[in-house]
Length: 258
Image (cartoon, rainbow, N blue to C red; front, side, top):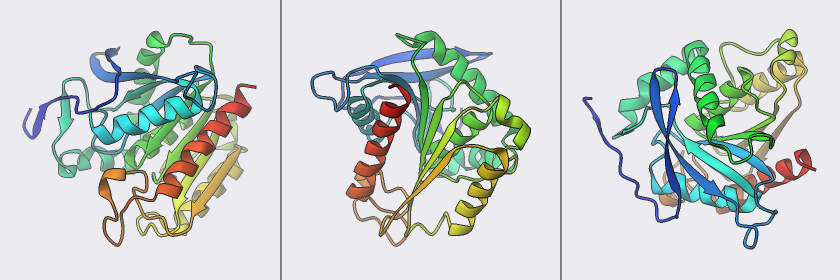
């Protein structure tokens, strides 16, 4: 496949690699488990599906986030992406068409996500636990679209992902979408202006969904990417926003699983 290369796991964390069958495609996924001794909550209080940013599920950055969320939240976590097993993007340009197609019309991507979530369901140690979707950047967009599609998701958290959609929820969709939506956003992010947050809030209110928007002062786009350092005017790591977003997820799971 032109412009793609074979996946290599660069993570330093200990995890189990899986191949997930969904329809006619196979996807890679990585399993992380909460540590009952080192975690902030008892292990396996919930199941977390994590969608990383555009760079996919094989990077050290994605594995760092997955390990920290599993341990902090006391959850079994499956990290995955939508690119298919055996390949990872070389550059943003390689995945930009996928991102743009999702933004213009998420219908096809929602079908893909429902199939992927169904495939992942075969791999949970306890499929009866609450399922939470978490995503970052493009992964945050995917997490929100998966919840809108009604994929057995009880709550969804997006960090610096586009919160709006061209196919918003309507009041009658409440029967299939039971998810609570949480948006964590950097106040200094030029890619997602306040107008997008307001549109998201209006969608949620019109559909009767429960939602929360949290903004972090000084945080830019990609504030969970520790490997970016200070970055540039638009993007950069923010330790406070990164940590607080993870704790918000922990508190969400603690409330939903109590």
